[in-house]
Length: 357
Length: 228
Image 1 (cartoon, rainbow over the protein chains, first blue to last red):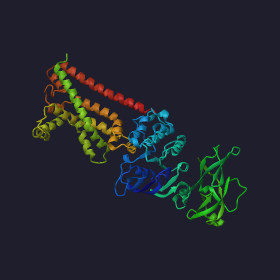
Image 2: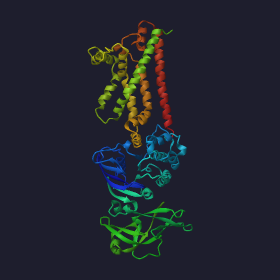
Image 3: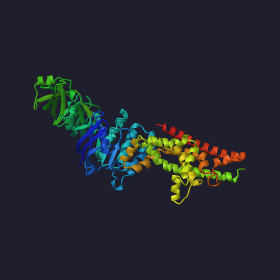
Image 4: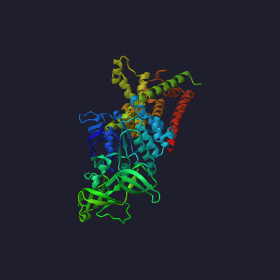
């Protein structure tokens, strides 16, 4: 089962062209900068944008087809979490939560009220008016409201963008729990690398209204053909398991396909899986193993791809470390100077890693 | 003491106001919804027409109604065709006159309330499975509650005070078209000041109380929404 989207939309001066196909499970991030058309894409999938043409298929349901048949928003089995929650101001929290639930046929209800309420930690809010809620609470209620309509697909439009950092860190664990507990596929719009790294299984990259690459997160962000990989903020994501924690040095050990990364972090439980995000600018390349260095992570790597960007005087090198992909952004001069090529064995010096778990 | 004919007039006035207000709320709802939501630029023409009774002398409305309702007028022809005959000088005619006369007082608050609705909440309702009609009844109307209260009170109070239109198309038939405002005029004409006082004071008190209730409830709502 998959989610297939192939649509176009002309809205005033803006043109959206989206084409992707991702599995109908887990979290798919729609990732791009502000103004790239992420929200419009999500609204089009929900049927909230008029004049969309093309095909939208979710599992075995067709919501829009190029033959002209279109399913109205209220008949699409969709849950939508807006940036600013948009709770119904005339209803209390409980009635907000039940709005979609009551409009879902009994046989199609897969989500249990008490379960969602517990999962999102909103038990104590049920009889409150929505104006009394904090930003984080509102967003949790809004997620619950969408879930309780038992959607085939949950659409989240930067659900944390309008929140301060405290509320953000309040929401993220709930989203992760949701991901683990309920098998509802989600499309998650975000421009935050942090959120994407933490949550996504798949990713659709979008720029200037056009989707470029889509696929599994780790491979796609390191895809050298994508615009993302050509930009100064390019990054790679590696995934592994925490195998040890050194209390004395406050270092965790992350096993990435047999390669042990040392990560400075607060106490972390071992045997949990974790991801690290490595910005391409923080990776340098050496031909010989630098033994006497303060850098924590120096790993043998194989060059798998090289792209030169003469205008910026830089070069992007894709490396294979523990069978996963790492990007290094180095100067063109260094690239020529080192004389590396595809299949060279080098040492990747990684100055900084961001741990997400 | 207040005489029975004054009581009859008062009762008739209240009856007229209730019936007219109910009709206005029912007819005003789709009209004001459309005015609040249509992107059509020409809606200003309709808005201006709706607002006319605010500025026109009631006698002008009454005069044209008299013609329209007469045996040669379009409405008169229609009612004759339906076998009702002319509704000039009847309660039905007064209701029609009141509906036109008080239309802006009902449509404008409703239109304002509908234009204040948060589109995003309506969209959220759609994603939660609510059809157009469902969204209208479950989101739009409850959220326009304040507008309905204002519209109802203003429509009612304004109809209570109707004089010019009634004078033109209603005349002065006790129990049928002789409303309080006409009765007051008659009492003054025949120097029955005490009867005029009874009726005037009653209308004054009713109108004041209605407006008071509206303002009090509006302030209460505002206080609530300030609690965050």
